Image (cartoon, rainbow, N blue to C red; front, side, top):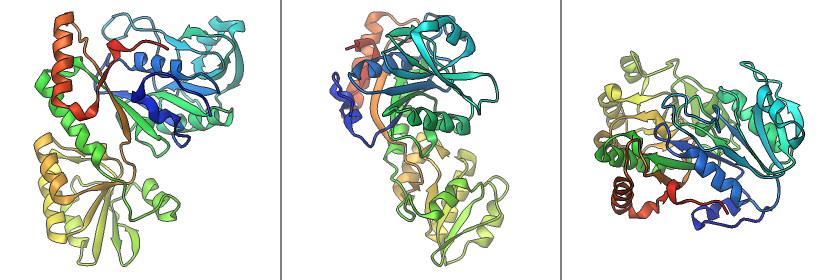
Length: 346
């Protein structure tokens, strides 16, 4: 087991069961690279891996054209890069393999021989990201850090992620908008894992793979033939019976569908199971009511283990950043926010 030093905020990294960690942010320039560098600095022994669901460590942000921190890799760290980065690093690395399943562009796995600064990247699809994670683990990585994003096209919402670090950026919007978003994320993070199927149960994998709404009746899950709620509310009402104990909805539940699904659950008494809490795309007030009334569960829980914030928004002065940090910490004392601007490298 690798030895760790540093912030108590990441003490959970010492858990041997935490093998895949993703860092996600609620907006652009949230500070994920700084968190990534801090986590890498906590490793004192052993082999870790790292990759991104985009390009991380580039000198300037593509959208805002502002300087970004480079990714600082320790010795004996496995990472994913493109051909140009591979050529630049030369004898500083060992090339492990070309990633065989990357369809968009040639990608490589390499291992550092010395500490260095570079860009990291990774595949763009969830399937390829999961394959990359497994390949890095097969090369001996005890933990894999993933610079990710919050969407269904990212590995962050897959069953292969053991922990999530959520970074709240001041660039998201007004202070009130940020507070509402954190409240929404807190509710989503509190949605428990469904206990109707176990991880080793074949029905668990059946539900994960299903693109259809499924119904649990008489001890079994069965597909409904309905792919989404959109335009299918009436057919769903017609097939639900008193025998329906639970409804699994793999797609999004939006504000437009909120009243319909609330009515269906109230009338049937069925348990709602979503694929991932982020499938509940409804605004805060409705989410609070929905959560308290129907107690939804998820096949894959959110697993946010650490909350971080980036108090330095675009155009912020130091005083404004300090005020933002103080107010957000006061609003959510239970989250123990760490500020990426306060992090140093061990």
